[in-house]
Picture 1 (cartoon, each protein chain N blue to C red):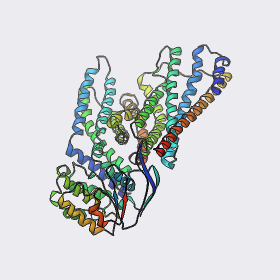
Picture 2 (cartoon, one colour):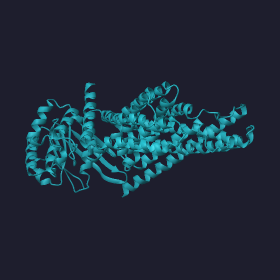
Picture 3 (cartoon, chains in turn orange, brown, cyan):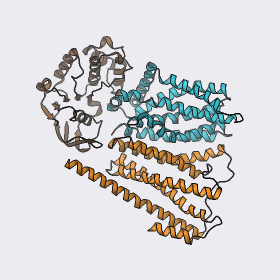
Length: 210
Length: 194
Length: 213
């Protein structure tokens, strides 16, 4: 529901800046990116809980959070790419640190799934996944730093794509979008988690009967 | 020394066993029997701490340094000599008077002459005897043996019989076998896996 | 405390001894890196600067390391030795540290050949590059050995190693190439040191969970 409000606000309320439609994408792009970070952070936290406290459901929660995170990361790349196309005329910008960071993270977290699918379900898989999720969260700031350092020798940047300066009403719209994205994550997370838990229960019941 | 209630282990969709209860007294000798695939090896791995139970409670009153495990594989590096392998284990297990103990065990299991040969050159019987050296090196008080007689040659069988008789009562044993007749007299308890 | 380092030493010694006997990994790494450098000559069209060559040097180093790392836990996996090591009363992180030190030795040996060869084929190597290589090696071996242990627990085994390793290696490449080509290499060397400290620490702290259930 909040998402609906957000879309409406973006479409009608926020004043247009000179770029027109493409600037609206920005209202989605950054909140989606921030939500992706939140997903990965949450996934790492749940991974830590699994390793440290042996919380029983933590592995599943970590997995679902990271799954959501990858979806949001993919959306970040798509929306970022669209924005870049409209604003700068290219589908991809190496000079956009945010975009490059998400590319690296996308690679990293895609490997998470390859890892997970290559191990039998059980405590081993949970351990490996949790450790990898924690590595991911450490990689985020390190990669960002690396990308920043790399930009100095890769090509002297003529322009740095950054978001538009936001006025009051734009900022409000932005915040609403952010809240909408986070609640979208929360909703999808709960949905997927419930679904997976039902799967697990079904399997357990089949075990008991069979 | 070991107490298990309602122990179960599952690998993915495959259920290995469930509902196992086990009580092992200090100095006891428990025989675990069952056909192939019944989970004898898995149970031993759980007791050794190499795997976690999927359900149930397990309490093993022994530290890693007190535990001896004999697996299907001899657990030695093929490219190292018998001496080098035992040296490594001796260091990791902080075995006191390492050199002497290694020498003594190699002699006892009739491997002294082959001590500088690479494990890759050993016959199956010799490998199993080397595994036994490894097993007894740190004087474990809890021994988990997975089909110890299966890979042994005639000489090795004799040597192992002697060792088991020697230690029976001092150390605690849990032995998985599908030849319960041979070890029957030594056993104080049996556990049959379906 | 001394017991821990004694364990690490015993394990590292074991790995070096195994390689000495088998003599398969190190020669392959040496041949690979030499062949890679030759390929790079053919891959650099005229007009690309000296700096492009330096960038490719780092690519060669990372992929040579990957080659070596794929063999890191093969003996343990094929002979069930990981069980043997995990059962021992020593700290499991000693397994990682011992093997990482051995891997470091192999990688360093490969570079002792690769760097002069590069200087011969392409352009000179300066002090900053060597420092960068030394620092990068620590990061590569720490993370590489860790991830190699993860990959042997999977069905895909060695296939998964590059997939898991390369994203984590990106910051190392940046640090290394930066140290080689940038005007002020200090920043990049500092960054490599940061990467090493950070990742070696989390590898050390979490290796236990990679080899146990």
